[in-house]
Length: 293
Image (cartoon, rainbow, N blue to C red; front, side, top):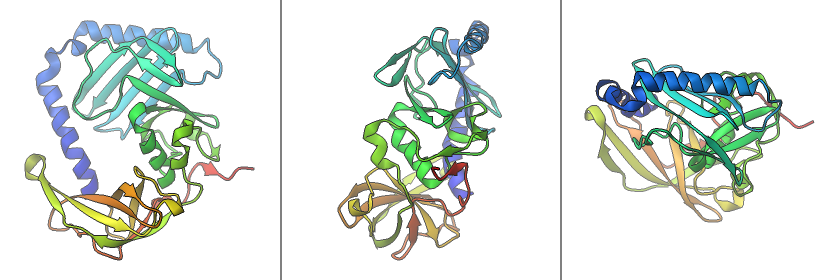
């Protein structure tokens, strides 16, 4: 819950700012709303003429509350994207789409929102996973691999942090997703289990609404010999009341350096030597992923 709050506070502040101040933005005008509806209808009509296209479709990502992101995209009709929340619309854009070197380039009609919350960018990477189709933000393919390693993907409902074609959450997959070759080392055939063997000096940073974030450097006892790479993530498995992640920053053959970010309150348990970690979330014991036949 505390981890969720840490992520939710800046998101809600952004939403509040947008809802309160940005309705003068052209993207929220009646003309933009009508243009988005028209574009959506055009995309949907084109989708009816396509068979198993490698990336065209209607996509969703989010939690159903503060993050509700819809994307419809097709080769000729372009794309339309909308981010809605429980407080109203947060962002909207539409335009043409171009495919180049395995990526999709989106021509935004309205200036890109550089809020730091990248729910969509001008570059998307189509990823096939058996019958499933994902559209991954170009700068976050490693993040998608972490989602796979942790067991959050393949998800079995529509809610998740990566855009998934509508309906694909019902489809089972085998093996690993077909990410670009340079990212394949970030996908693990089996979980890596590790332990914190050293804890460095923590630093703190003020957040929104009088919150404080603590950043603690740690050393873990696994490295490149075990398949670990910078950019990967561990989840804390013990103590079991802690729901933090270790972000790996650098690695050596037999150990790695990482950072734990925590929202500090009276219940926060600070990292110590001996904490157990895994790239696999302990609560993800089942998934839509099956062993290859």
